[in-house]
Amino acid sequence: MKKNTMTLTNNMTGDSYEYKILEGTRGSCVVDIRTFFADSGMFTYDPGFTATAACESTVTFIDGGKGELRYRGIAIEELANNHTYLETCFLLLNSRLPSEEELYKFDLEIRHRAFLHEGLRHLFNAFPDNAHPMATLSAAVTALSTFYNDHLDMTHEEEFLEMAHRIISKMPTIAAFAYRHSLGIPFIQPDIDLGFTKNFLTMMRAYPGGKMHLCANGHEDIKDVEVRALDTIFTLHADHEQNASTTVVRGVASTGAHPYVAISSGISALWGRAHGGANESVIAQLEYIGSVENVEAFIKRAKDPDDDFRLMGFGHRVYKNFDPRAKILKNLQDELREELNLDTELMAIARKIEEIALSDDYFISRNLYPNIDFYTGIILTALQIPKSMFTPIFVIGRTVGWITQWIEFKKDKTSKIARPRQLYIGE
Ligand code: ACO
Image (tube, helix red, strand yellow):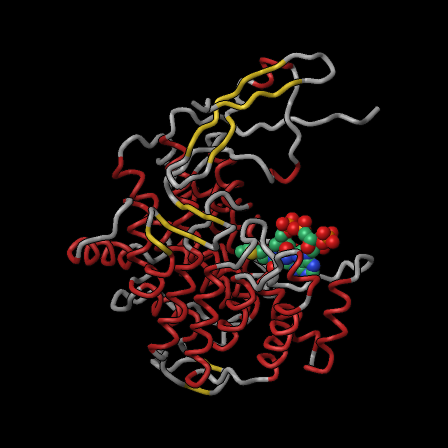
């Protein structure tokens, strides 16, 4: 019989150590090296944590080789095609989809909590008009912790859920206020008669005091197809296991800091263009490329090892076959083409890049496929959402994932403060 262990031999000393192999529920395995330092006096070395699992989790499963993503066991395709973002939030927090009655109550609760304390509203005035909404968002979420300071020692399920519902509900309001502040236009308060996603679009677009909306094409109402597209984007962003920003959230959680400060740290981590900031960079790059004729030259630059230039929206640390979220969005983009006027020069450049990259040996041999950010950038542009709001939209979707992972961390009796070691090579 095969033994579920791995033996590591130090060839310098001849000492051998045996470690258990722990099996996950979907075929993944990890080597349990928790006693490695005590056994050998050495640390493992793994910059970027490319071969390190830092926790057990029941929230999200990814098989990067197969291009598979599941929240609480349910395939992302099923959630994106047949359920709303709010149902997905309920699923992540409660480990099951809601009944009709539960969804009604959950939706009502989220609508009720969407307003911001007046004191928090005034905070926005402190920031310059040209502040990036991600910076304002992170600061405002840190400030939120000053209004809910009684939640540091949660022990009851209701306390965890109340704290989670509050942040999920207020995030679109904070994001919309950050945006309107950046334009210097009056805030639009949340409307309790509107569902989660339409409410956010309204707070972004509505003209103060009236029903008409501010759109590049003039005054129009929000279309159902726009609400559906954005809701799908929120669902696809809801969680993604131990990505960089979630790792930051868990790291801050491990020190015992306030949950909203942990979320604020996650927002800061997400801002970077190697992570959530890529969706903004995709469009900035397409604009920079400027025309279909220039695409070949930029592809050449992306392949040049002496050039830092990278194609934004391509490649992923985990997906080495395809990003299943990107596949769903590509289909959605095709559906939206007619209704949302997607046939622009920007789209033509995007299509050309996609076409070349998918058939070029450089990209194929390195498993560089379009990721979720490639398509969200394009779809959000079609929804007339400005580039600076792309990553805040990612934040709105991901908030439920961060808070779910925060709760899981807090409930895990084996969790410890995050404190990696180093290989000292200095004087
Ligand atoms: N364009 C051109 N070449 C690339 C790209 C790219 N977008 N991404 C990776 N490569 C190349 C690297 O130069 C490297 O080539 P080499 O082996 O010849 O040196 C090889 O592919 C491997 O790249 P790594 O950086 O080692 O891959 P890693 O897994 O560490 O990085 C990452 C993944 C950060 C996503 C990377 O692919 C990238 O920078 N992509 C562009 C930014 C982006 O789209 N980020 C969004 C990620 S999805 C998300 O966060 C929601």
